[in-house]
Each structure stands twice: as structure tokens, then as C-alpha cells.
Length: 148
Image 1 (spheres, one colour):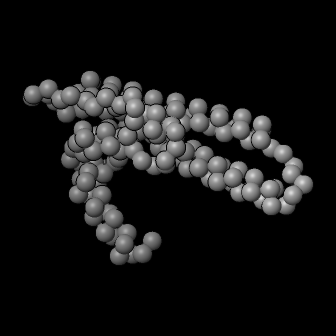
Image 2 (image 1 turned 90 degrees about the horizontal axis):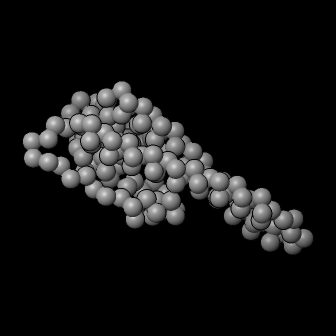
């Protein structure tokens, strides 16, 4: 499962993850494989949404106007960190949704840059991957050279 953030949702998803067992001669991205990744993505999305709900409850329940400026600053920093994490997760949910759309359109599992198979194990490590390892490596090298 992807390691985009180190929160409870990721670790819960890791505990329920079962790797896909390929059969000899099996066609790449057949219906069983697509269903495996669809379920993985839906589960991951559900856990992220549950985390959003917990955050909203936490922010409502814990919101207090502390008279001590240091306590108030600590609480604001905690809330700010939590909101930044949720914002990253919101972006990840969008990426999961677009990946689910790729599965529906039979475009999932192939590199956007060169068209080769991304691979089952890479997709299990990062289900939202759109580049094969080679193209991703080249992309990262170019990124370092440009200094983005």
C-alpha cells in the first residue's frame, strides 16, 4: 500500500492487504486483476474518508479558547498540522478517484509515457502509479536537473 502519509488509515490498510496471486499464463490487467485493484483503491479511499470524519469531530470537540497564549498556540499548531495532513489526503482521494476511472475505462496498469505494463507488484506498492519504474526514474532525474 502507498506510503503517502504515516497515519492510522495507511497502517489499517496494510493490515488487510492481500497480494494478488498471478496464475501462470494469465493475461495482464484481466478482470480479476482490475477487481483486485478496484477493491484495494475503494478500501483505501473509505479509510481516508473515515479519517476526514474523525478529524472533523476532533476539531469540533477539541476547539477551546484557552486563556493561556502558549496553550492556544499549541492547539492552533496541532489543528494546522492536522488540516495540512487532511489536505494531502484530499488530493490523494482525488487521485484515487481518477485511478478508479482509469480502471473503468480499461486504461489502468499501463505507463502514461511509454505504454508498457507498469506491473502488478509496483501497482500494489503504489496503486495510483501512472508511470513504469523506468519512466518514473527518468522523470525524477529530470526533476533534479531542472531543480523544481
